[in-house]
Amino acid sequence: MQRKANSKPMKAIMQKILEYYQDWLSFIIFPEDLIINEPVEKWPLCDCLISFHATDFPLYKAIEYERLRRPYVINDLHRQYDLLDRRKVFRALARAGIAHPRHCVLIRDADGNGMSQ
View: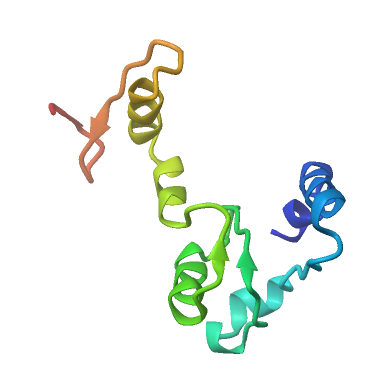
């Protein structure tokens, strides 16, 4: 998670936001240890939240934080669960008229057997 927060793309996003709004905001990157080990009640207060899914990121805790503190949320936290399901991603692309590769989805049960849908 920390690597993603300090990645070149993330720094570019933050830089672009700061170019326009530097007089009105400052960034706080919540420490990884805090996110993983502390309850959301102990997380820093913020007026606006940007949260991206990452491996081992407890998205459910970010949603708890949103419910508790009610910050303005830049990206829909609940929809980030959809990104973990290719079927939902392809469905959303098709609904929006966005070209995407042909695809086939095989759904398996808990035993690994293919299921018809």
